[in-house]
Length: 359
Image 1 (spheres, helix red, strand yellow):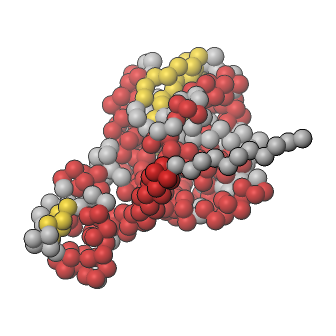
Image 2 (image 1 turned 30 degrees about the horizontal axis):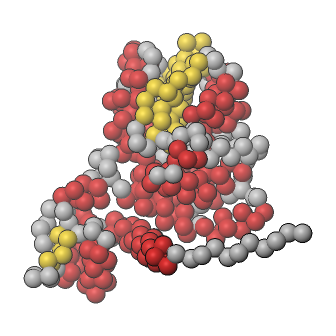
């Protein structure tokens, strides 16, 4: 006969500590929305380099309402995003925060990170229902802040690392690109990675592909604006169906784990690669075990994986649902299942792992 366990004794100090931690979590959740607000209204940009400002002065500079701005500034000061001088009633954006919140060319630029987080939270009621049924929700079904925030979050990291360290870490790839290579950028989204490579290597040609038509429309427009449309084409197609063959380089940036059938995509890469071609796979930084990822970066990526990546994979055929924290071993398994025989980690950052796969 089963016996009931005695209720665990409650440590009052630990309970109080957890409650106050939860209060901090709620504040952080609300602050994410307020960071997006400050970005969209230009509040951070108006504060950057302006010295101490009153709420009224900041409101005047941004054509906003001073009473709202005062409350927003109080929140930002409580969170350490701005500094407050009680003697003058003025607020200052420190230079370090100014870089992270206003400099789109900095690898530390953060507003896109907050924007994709808010978009994910806005969509969370639908994900909650999907958890009950096991249904998926495709990338195309998410709100605009998810699409725009994703590109704004990843682009600074690509700008900082792709040309300077990731591509040079691949065996012989830069030399091919400089001479003139044929490149497929799969799952390209708004085309940030495709356009960056095209601007850097003018002798090479690029085909960007994504199954989301709205993203491809944006990519085409941005290629025109960047002056590379003569060497870059974009097509709406799934990862296992992009056109062309004999590619010197196939790239996938932060998207393989989102695919329903990543092994099928890997087989298509093998079929379309030149015999001496290279597949570069950029994935979120992750260890192979859960305990390897119990840290702030892993926490954020597990959150995105629950709300975005896993639903996206489950909405497609096969629905393997690797998740954003798949880890190197599972990515290797996918690559080998696709028929490629060589696989190695070529580079890494605190946010990404870069793999090289070859026939």
